Image (cartoon, rainbow over all chains, first blue to last red; front, side, top):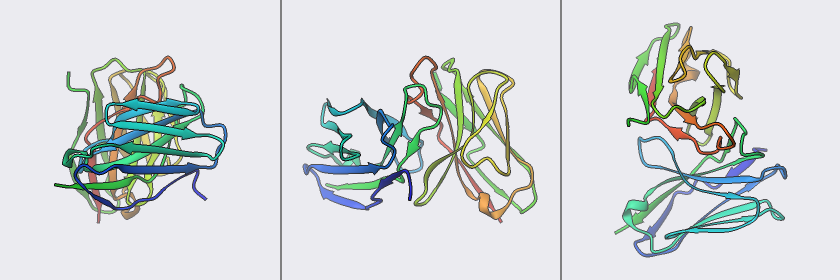
Length: 112
Length: 114
């Protein structure tokens, strides 16, 4: 069993829809939860990070962490074609962990 | 400010050949990493470095070697390439001081081993 599970999709939604992405994990020691966005043929870039449980909002993006269920989510409101990308979740135990545990990524296409 | 750059962008090798991938960062970051990305597997850490002159193994280090002679550069070597090393390789860097999760990635090197 992988330490971090992420449905690869692909996910296709119409412009303006809410995109819902999620990951589950098995290591209860994880405290830092990140979402990276990767455009086609580019390197990943950090989108958001959350420490411990709770919600974090940044513009149209909301990250949620439910440590009791070992489940994290990313919501994209009012999705745009420019949001079409692969979204990878990543986790670590401390803020100084050299090794991040990545999900396999979910590919999202937002149709104009 | 170029961020993280990787050389080359593409490469085709024959089985048994060797090559070196170069990564450079201009953000004065302490930590640097080499990952490989394969379909359905996500990003897997090959080797990493927490400072100039130091290197350590990640989760898939076999068949690769690394060196970090200068803080801004991190080299990944394949001594005898195998078809299983066909992948996209990403270099990343991050600040020290409790910000290891904030990793900055290069554009990747697409390697095919025939």
